[in-house]
Length: 264
Ligand code: NAD
Image (cartoon, rainbow, N blue to C red; front, side, top):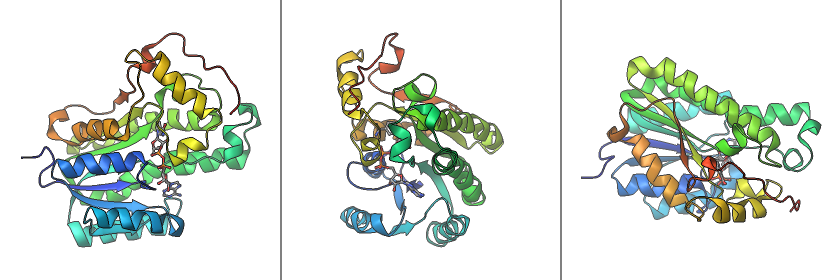
């Protein structure tokens, strides 16, 4: 029997088959979960729908997390299809390309607000909105990059600040939801080549640096993150909440991590 047999899981943030959300989807499926997928909007639809068909996923719904009415609507649709849900995955982030290449002190007010809205507030908003239809004992999780949140990762800039806020939000939500035995955790993934990562200046160097400098001397894959997500979604982790779990070949434990900045 799979670790997630009989559990209903909603995954937000699928863009394509390189997405971390896709690695999570695959692992959840393998462990027997019933999957629902949500994506950002029309542009994503044509990439996401064929993927959903491939895995015979019947619940595929649009939700731009900057829109309260779309969040409300997607909860209604989830309730109509699943009744209650057990697992909620937030694998969403956005910051304008400019903000991820110029010096951090040049961050614009609007760029700051947008990054915080899409990458942090949406986690709070989705958790709040889905709470009425979440089973006690459920699991909520988000994706962070701790090496850019608690330390400085060149070019990560406002996204590092957003991830620090996201990790803090994880702890506050864990406190709120604890009495219902709903756990809230963050996975800190190592550098993975995805659409979102492509927007971070110098990502190519950072990616290579990971493989060279991490204790395990290798990059992580979306499948690695998917399996960690399965652990956090399953009853195996039933007393773990408010944590940031690193899935990064140990990169974050290293003392000297400076990436030579070639600005690529
Ligand atoms: P991705 O581009 O595949 O996923 C990001 C998703 O965010 C996309 O599906 C996009 O449509 C969605 N999104 C953006 N704006 C949205 C909006 N307004 N409403 C709804 N969805 C919206 O890239 P990814 O790397 O898989 O990113 C997933 C998560 O993993 C993000 O939180 C990212 O910061 C985090 N992460 C990525 C890495 C990495 O190296 N790739 C490392 C650590 C953490």
